Image 1 (cartoon, rainbow, N blue to C red):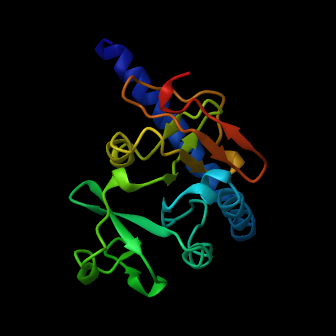
Image 2 (tube, one colour; image 1 turned 90 degrees about the vertical axis):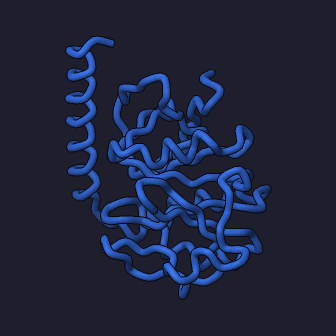
Length: 204
């Protein structure tokens, strides 16, 4: 890819990112719609079979997950949430909502004093099912994040048999997200309207 192509790709991604953010901000009824999407996630057979499940904790206008976390904590599974340290995502075993607090960027995250406690750090390879946020998606399972690569770096180390399931509002879906070789495809995308099977990491 030459410089001109790279610039075109960057501009196209930025345009989609801006449109997706605007769509997400304008999405009405976020609370009940988010609850419906999270319910669909917890009704997946992959969720029933999983022992260790990663939930993301919603930020700004993402599909809201925090209202469903207390229910998930009662399912007898290891519930894991990510948090950011020095540009990378670390994983924390969540056992109570009281273990979360508002951090410096107004993000709900594990309390710093608990992060290294025994049994709290979790290796990404222990995850049996991974819930993934994103800014925009297409129906092939292509995902666009904020452009920082945090989730790409995490997901490339997830086990191949651990499904990657994205949560999104229907307004975040686009006909095609431009991708590059290193991009990770989702196995499924759940919206308020449908469950879309993605390509996953097999590339099929």
